[in-house]
Picture (cartoon, rainbow, N blue to C red):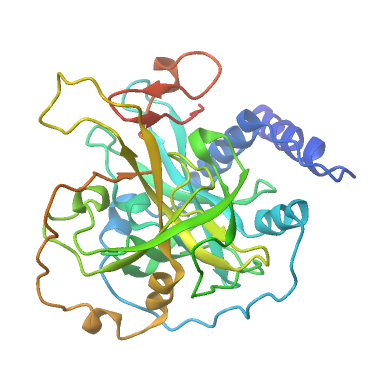
Length: 352
């Protein structure tokens, strides 16, 4: 009874200040993450969670027929657009048993709803990225109100484009529409969870569109064979590790891309360890919506058997996937996310 009472108090702490008759959303990151861990514990005891090992086995290139949301035609002001995105953006991440302290933590990435029946889009590497020291882990998703859902299955995936559709144990969700054809110079917005700072809203422009015929396979956790040409966006809206899978939308709230990875312009080459790096500028890569739409083709697996592509000449900057490494909070500095030079990005605020 004491444990149940504590959980009820914790849930009330998260929900009441945020949603109680206020036009502002004030985030308590610790309370939000603690609620995810406590609720995931309950789902685990009820045998409702699916292991990451099982989900990883389902990630192979295939499509699924999906009824898509109609494009939105109503232009929204940024505060209203942010509220709209919060209705459809989830914290999708790993609930795992820490190899250091033996307790349970949550490492968050991002996803967004594309189907009312619990269909969510995120990056393949959110599922595939592993830590060999973590022996037990499960994928869960949480909405802005703190409801936590088990990830039940991988419905479709394109490992070349690093995007997939998963099903969570939820109904009545509010999907976002998928819009192809975004142009360079258009304004875009992003809602994500960089470094465990939940529901961060940023604004920018589409800096360019580009294709990569040899997307960094290491970033997607696959072999070093080159991929088919992938359509990508570079945007100036800020994101960071923890943002993987987040929606990038136009002012109408239509998804034009999905957060994927970062390259550092100006970093030293890997074989020049003693060379001082030049000032680094993050180049942010997003998977274009055209690639996400391919997931809705049931014949995707057949279409993907293309001949081996020849890598483009010249060195390519390594893309860093934006999931957050599994870290024990007891090894981190007080106050939340810290920078790990070895990992090349911030670590998550994990909780017991």
